[in-house]
Every structure is written in structure tokens, then in C-alpha cells.
Amino acid sequence: MMKVKLSREQILLVIIEAAVKKFEIINQKLQEQLYRYSVTNLFNRKYLLEKGNQYLKEGKYNTLAVIDIRNLRTYNEIFGYETTDRILKALAQKIREYCEKGCLVGNLDSGRFWILTHIEGKKREEIVKEKAKGLIKFLAEDELKIKIGSEDLLILVSLNVGIAFYPEHGRDIGELLMSAEMATDRAKDKGINTFTLFQEDFKKNVEENIWIEEQLRKSIKTGRIEEQIYPVFQVRVNPRLGKVTGVEVLMRWKLHPRIFKVVLVAEKTGLIKELFNVLVKKTVPVIKSALSIYPSLSFGFNISPAQLGSVEELRKTLDHLIKEGIEPQKVQLEITETQILENKQVEETLIEFAKKGFKLVIDDFGRGYSSFDRLKTWEIYGVKIDRSLIVDIPQKVKQFGDQVREFKFLKNLVGFLKNMGYAVTVEGVETPEMVELAKQLEVDEVQGFYYSKPVDEETFIKCLKEWSKMGKCPFSGN
Image (cartoon, rainbow, N blue to C red; front, side, top):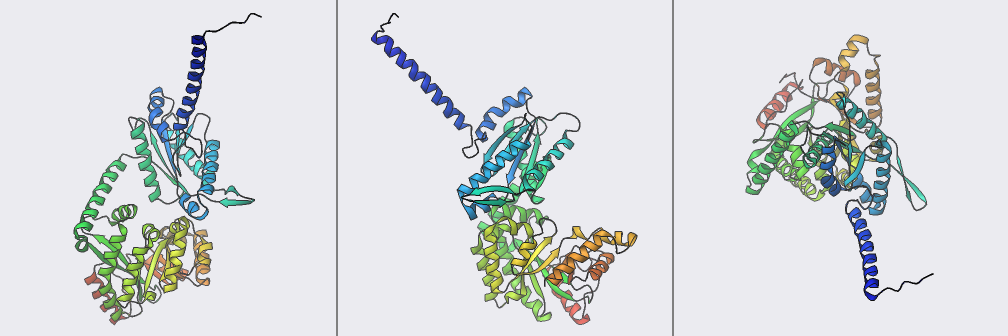
């Protein structure tokens, strides 16, 4: 075999070519890594934004879904990053399992995934809704098994999904992603394990939210928030005796009529802490006046997740009540079920306040998870049953009698809660029939427009004086 002798220049050329090929391979791998989320190895946000437009124009995909895992932070706080990474990997695998072969799956960041898919036809919305329901059920219904050493950790995830269509909801991938994220935020407002399809009014909603945030920040900075925030009061009544038993203190803001939207923005931005502080300070003299008329009253305040997540300001505000001579036993802290389930720190905070004597009440019971485990474990004083559980029952009882399934279920639920020692309140009572139902259920309190809408300080104190003389709260109808 003839040996070929290479010149020094040729050898150098071969070495250079080999080095270039090696560099190209390394560079290709680096480029691939730039487009991957390191924990799950799924495509990342950069990939979606850089490659997405091409896919949309080619007609390969026309639907984008964003999945937000709500309780991942809680698991991170309890078990640390290593376990959280394993949860993310398990979720990534499950999402890929659920999606069809034509889908593209990726991570926006830790705890948020995206799915690009193609769905055609007049029934696209119906198909997408069914797929979203199926995805939520697939991810949230069964426990994930995560290996920690020799132990198996079983976890349940809670999530929200937002969906947007191309080109209706975005002219390019950036706009489409923004629309899907808006839809995800709107789904969060509906509770855990829900989904929402994007609607055009979401953009107006975002603009309105920006205005609210700007005005709140400006008012807090200038001190004008003290003039703008004020309390209103809605009584709770014993339906059998007609006596006022308590009051819920609600917030109002002079610059915007829809306080629900204001509170949502304040919670998301963390500004709720300042607003709550003003509300409580303005309520103190009213509480003192009311207790001088009705010594047995208790006053309920709604507590938001943002306050429980950063507890120092809330602690100071509640301590202010005590310093003003208001006993903690006269104050109810109303929290929702999802707040209990989503954050480990909430548990420690609520236990602390319960030990001080504040009464813990689960608000909107029945709208989300109903965690009986938490009920029996914590120092819960009472439960407020959401209006949605009772609103249709009076008509059904009228038609079919008290053996109707919904009535029997609610009767047993109230009986169970009362046997456990909890005070039970029914919210949203607006008609004589609903009051009669509350009596049959033997609940402790009702709250709603049948007795009184939320009223200002002057009207509230005036009504209390009248009711004190009468010995009961008459129907007001306003």
C-alpha cells in the first residue's frame, strides 16, 4: 500500500478542518441548549418567540396554550429546588403524554409551560375546551409520584390554563403569547384548575388594571389614600331570632366603583397591605361605637394571599386593633379555601393569629377545594357557605320537597360542620325563601341583601341603634 506523504501545509489544513468540524458540532449543541429549558429539556421561551412566527405563517400551528402550575412554589418552600425540579420533569412528561404527536411543548419558565397545536374547523372552540378540560383532569386529578431517596412523595398539582388562537388573538407569536398569558390570568380569577379562552375585552381589562395600579401607587405615595379608602358594613343575622350577630367590614375606593377589580389589582401588586392598613384604622372608631350599642358583635375582615405571604405588615395592623382596646375575639379573619391549600407559610401565619385569639373563618366554602383535613387540623372558628351552593335549592324544594338531593347534601354538610363545632354562615341571602331555607338548615348566621346591603358608617350605626331597641333586625330590602 502506497504511503502518501503530506506536506506541512496539508497536515495543518487537515487539523484546521477537523477543528472547524468539532467547533461546528459544539456550536450546534450550544445553540440547541440555548433553545432548551435546562430542567425539563423542553423548548424554552426563546425558542417559542424566535421560531414561532415561522410555524404560524406555515400553518403548522394556530393555537397556543399557557399552563401555570399554581402550587409549585409551595413544594419548593417545603422540599427545596431538587424536589421541585423532579416535579417539573414529571409534569413535562405528563404534558407530552397528553398532547398529540403534532403538538409542540415547552417551558416559559419554572412552573409555566406552553403548548402549540393546530386545530381546524367550525367547532374549534368546543374542541379546545374539551382538550383543556381533559388536560386539567389528566394533570390535577391523580397524584404525581416523586422519588426522594428511598421514599415516594405523592403530590397533587393545581393549575390554570389560558388559550389563544392565531390570527384572531395575535398577529404574531409575541401578541399570541401575550393573549394566552392574559387568558391564564383571567382563569386564575376563577379559581384553581380552570381554563379560559382569550377574549378581546381582556385587553381593555389590562389597560384598566394598569390605570388602577398607577392611581393606587400615586395615592399611597402622596398620602391621599387615607381620604379615598373607606369602610362599608354588612350585617350577619341569626335567621331564627332575627338578631344581629356580626358584621363584615368591606372596602370601598372613591376613584373606582368596582371594588372587586381594585382588590384584585391590589392583591397582584402587593398594594393590598397598605389599603388594608388604612381600612382597619378607619374602622377602629366604628367598631368601638358599635360595641357600645351591641357588645356581642364580631367584625370580619377579608384577608388576601398577599397579606398572608408577607405577614409582618398584617401583624402590625392586627396589633393596632389590640392596642386600641379591641379584643381579638371580636375580630374574624376571613380566608378562602385556595389560600389554605396554596402556601405552606399561610398555615404558620394563621396558627399564630389563632393563638392570639383572632377567629379564623373559611370564606366562600364550596367554591374551590373543600379541605376537611385543614378544618380538623387548624383552629378554625367558622365556615361561610358560598351562595352558589344554595341559590337554586329553594325552588327545587318547592317543586320536589325536602328529599331533593341538593337539599339533603347541604343539610348533611351543615350538620357535619356544626357537629365539628364550627359556626356556619350562609352568604348571599336575598329572598324570604332563602331565609326559610337557612332556618331549615339550622345555620348560625345569614348574610345578604335580604337584611341589608353594605352601608356606610353613619347608616350602619343608625340601624344598629334602631335594631338594638327592637331586639331584632327587620327586613330592609335595600
